[in-house]
Image 1 (tube, rainbow, N blue to C red):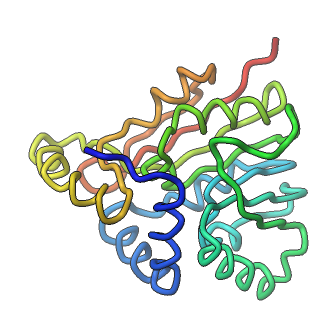
Image 2: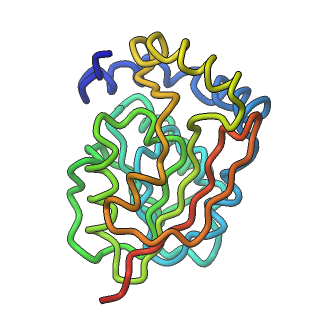
Length: 211
């Protein structure tokens, strides 16, 4: 199964951008559940949001967050996110194009890294996890919501059948377990929960150890 590259992924999400909010909104209501409120509720200080997309998390950021740096490959998705930030009057958000596998950010420069439904499309989620680890301050948090392999055997079989098409047309891997990428990068897992239909949604809270 061929993995789409970053240019292909950007083009896919440029096409999705005008209708993305409606499509993902339906999927979250019916399958994944509301994980965004939980994720952003754990964000503190200087936040880096990887694959910020259309900025669906932006309305949830509260006063505990000082600054938001949102990174995404797709100019089309970022255009929607910038409109959303402007409508919210969210002047503490900087939204810019970039590759989350090679973050253009200094070491130890973030207090929280946020990821919602991104590891499924990143070509190398291990590299993205390592970059998140690098930019976090010691003790900093990684908060993630992601869909992955279902806890139900039947649902997992259906995911396995659907995955070749989902990767080809949407760069969407259905069977990645995000926890293993975080532990391999050096994170300590503080909490992990399975929610959504057939347990497809992972909610993970991790931190970068203090030397």
